[in-house]
Image (cartoon, rainbow, N blue to C red; front, side):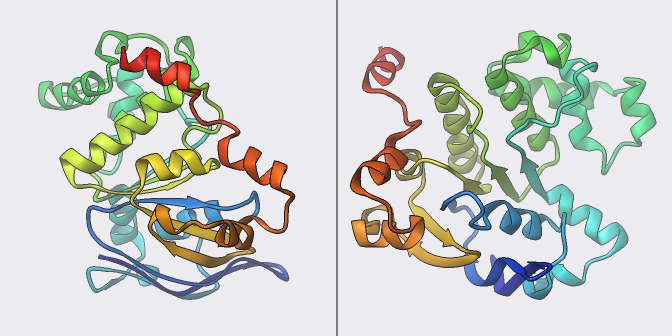
Length: 268
């Protein structure tokens, strides 16, 4: 169980996250929505301890994550794998080596860069790539792949960390609709089959409603909604996104969701 207790992060006079309190049960898939600058990315970075909170605590199964240092902090970051909007792959390295970078907390970096992998380590990476439909691309340079393929490589790398929690920061924001569906399907499959908790920031409500049975809405650093997709009424959406006209709110709901024709083509 992951608990955020009055968690805050200030940058100067600005509260990027403002006294956020929430409990996430093991195995949940949670979508986090809100306008740009609402604090979604900062919240995930706080959970992963890429940045430290100004106030408050993060607890996981009774452990005070905010007090971790050194080896224990590195282990926490390994078990709360991050997936970024811009993939964060090493373009000059092949796909297999990029995936093996997920083992950095267990394998020394020089051995990874020199590609000194055991047969067991190599099998783990190939298995993760195969699960994501990319085993045949294992020896390609990362920059030879499309954006959607690179994001799936990043997910495979995250799986090599053997995470308990997967944090996805706008994982489909730069992808076309068909690749966005492949990435979201992969995250949902990992959540369902492996029981890994998934927290993902999403721009579009349609995507959050489709894939997440729980949605957290943020505005100005605060959590202003926490509930099921069915509870996202027009009034609630205006609390999350502000006072926009009907047209702009409708555009926000569906701006990058998959068109019906694309869904039909995938289903066929």
